[in-house]
Amino acid sequence: GGGSKMVMTFYQGVDVVILFDSWKVSTVGGYVGALILTTLFTFVAFMMKEFTLATRIHLAFRIVLMFVSTAFLYMAMLITMTYNGGLFFAVVTGLTAGWTVNEFLRLRKVANLHRTPYEKI
Image (cartoon, rainbow, N blue to C red; front, side, top):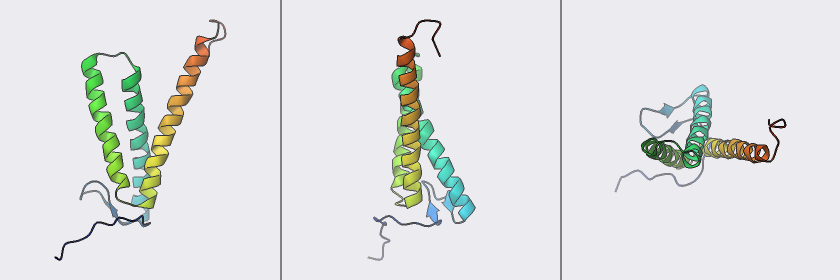
């Protein structure tokens, strides 16, 4: 057959289709924008998931947030499956930043639990 094969090795370049045929990048500026957007997207997806798990909001709202955050995280996985090195690192950077901010907030909350009211941050 004359079918096209999916690339299964990492490559570096600005020519990439991200998730949808309508999101084609072919310029350096577009690629840098896609890297920034991908990093922010995965950061927000991670923080949304952690918020959903840690909060006591109404169950229906938690279900919607879990659905959306899970969909976003799977979309981030699909972005990594473009095998574009920059996009892979953008996803990992966004997830790492989300974990770092979440961990900082968690540790700050734990530290505040052990302080008197006058010592609270």
